[in-house]
Amino acid sequence: MRIVRYLSQNGSPAYGWVRDDLIGPIEGDIFGTYRRGEPRIERSRVRLLAPVQPSKIICVGRNYAAHAAEHQAEVPKVPLIFLKPPSAVIATGEEIVLPPQSQQVEHEAELAVVIGKRGRWISPEEAGDYILGYTVANDVTARDLQMSDGQWTRGKGFDTFCPLGPWIETSLDPTDVLITCHVNGEMRQMASTRDMVFSVPQLIAFASSVMTLEPGDLILTGTPAGVSPLNPGDEVRVHIEGIGELVNPVVAGERGK
Image (cartoon, rainbow, N blue to C red; front, side, top):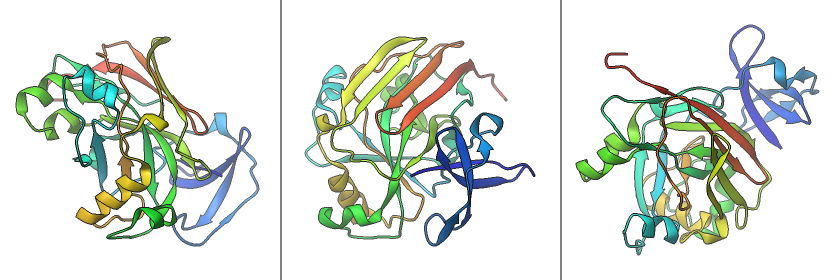
């Protein structure tokens, strides 16, 4: 099932589910008990929002060996995790804003895991019970600031630096799906999730050994090789097989705005 979050006719956010090009309302709690209504709303007539509002966004660095190699970095022996703030989240169709503090902002196409229930010290064998589904993410990064700071909070944390969408896919086997990223129609990234160093169950187990995972939290599972700079006027398309496509235009930011 594909779960979307959208602006309802009265202007308030609502959850729904997608069948073909129609959306049906969801009544209740997507992380608990809910009921699906008949899909009658044309998807083209509503504005899609980011499909989830996470309390935290856990990201994984260097989880593809080829990406680590393109930065002359070693593959970590245990998952290398960092956080992005929830304020970085935007939806498909919304603008990625290039901050004036950076001269080198890059895209990072990633599979994102949406946590479905609260958990701590989750074993890899139990990890599937804690997954609501998956969505498409772009871990936008100010590479020059990441490198100059020596830690990653500023380079990863600007507003608009976590595009998500278009929806949550609840039925996906994440072991071998194709991730691609195009900028202005040009292929920049392409790899399968089978190339990940640490699997989704391993990442959930590791993250939950550090912090409690809450419903709606995200784990961004790392990016393949091929990251490259973004410029004002670009359009970034991240596609994940079995989920869909996340599309965002790129604009220049101004100091003080």
